[in-house]
Length: 313
Image (cartoon, rainbow, N blue to C red; front, side, top):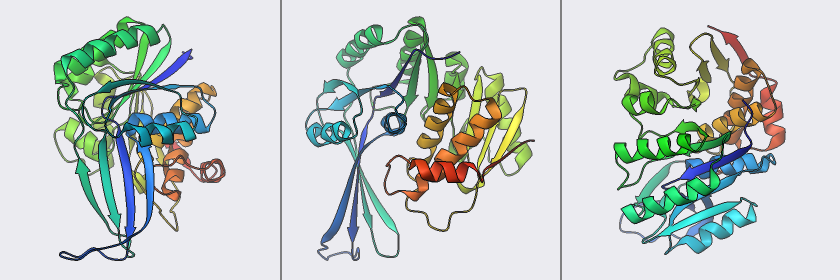
């Protein structure tokens, strides 16, 4: 089906603040030489990539008010359309300190706990925004206050309004997935291992794990493996996407989000599945060529897309 509208739902947005320093040693003061600020979070990252390809969408964001001004100014700079539900507290912040050898030390500030009043407000906004044939990208870590049951209830409410769900969160359990039955799910290796309940050491192990998700009700399963490409299944056919080796990697953060956005864009372009998997893999790989969580450049996506090999396994 083609979607009449696309919404990304971020219950735990994050400001990614990358600070470049000359060194990072205890008991010393270090000057931040340059700083990169990205308004991010998995769902927001999908919105940013879609917007960079002129795919209209709305980022529905539950945000702590205290440090929100800079965050939403950044999204306005990128022309990302938003609808915001404000709550008490601060937007989650990921503070990364990068030294000249490329190593990053990450400090994570927690976001606000979501209260029942905010969930009620979210339901009202979803009832306004979600219509039949609306794709809702539910992505990112679920914050405190969103239990498994509430998470499933939010997804069920979206579906009751006629919405279709794209799922990308490590908070989801296999039982959640069986209840939600998303249109597409995009786990990475770590998330796929967690859902399978074991390490996946061989290609056959991975094939069995993605098939398990298809059997659980996922229409499309798009598993990302970084430099090792992607594996896709709809339960009937399984494809492997091999990606080119990159000579320089600027950042791998947000690569999976870019891949999911690429798959959605390919669907909007009415590509067949094999071509859609290639496009998704190209987006994920091209995103590693830019700093932070910035959307991949179109020219990089086009060049890498020509080098991705997709074949049935």
